[in-house]
Length: 187
Image (tube, rainbow, N blue to C red; front, side):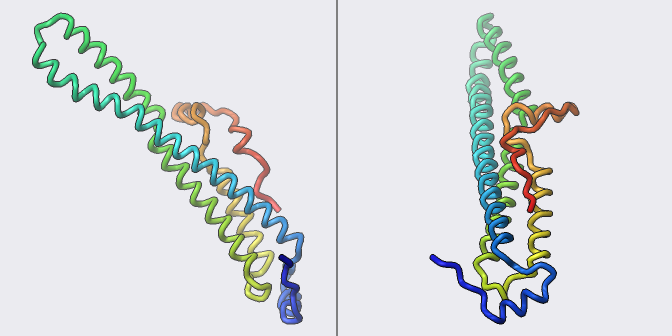
């Protein structure tokens, strides 16, 4: 499939711009779109992973509470039941701590949010490049908008790793995952 060649009207319109559309800008934007797509997929996978972790950490706690409530009243006088109660409550406490400090639901939400933001950048670039030259916004304005949005997303994106983000509750900082750093969304 060949690219449509700009006609005389496209040349007149783009000559009035500070920096007209050219193949180099289009190739750079396509590269940024691919990178945004890759990052959106990564955040989508992280969101699904954190949803799964939340379910598998919370479900046993709920089930243990439903099982232990009637058993505690039925066998309250038994010493074995008292020990089982103690250990069940300790395990539930550890599980609740894991859910609190892991913040799996919050991390899933943040990753899903950033997934949609990266998809939005990718779609914006794809839709703009599909338009004829005369219907596109100014090249400099569009590139600056995409670059600014990409840099802000990359800087504010949550960690897609499992173990690093919980320590941010305590003010500790670690280097971000190398997959998340990647090349900056720059032109």
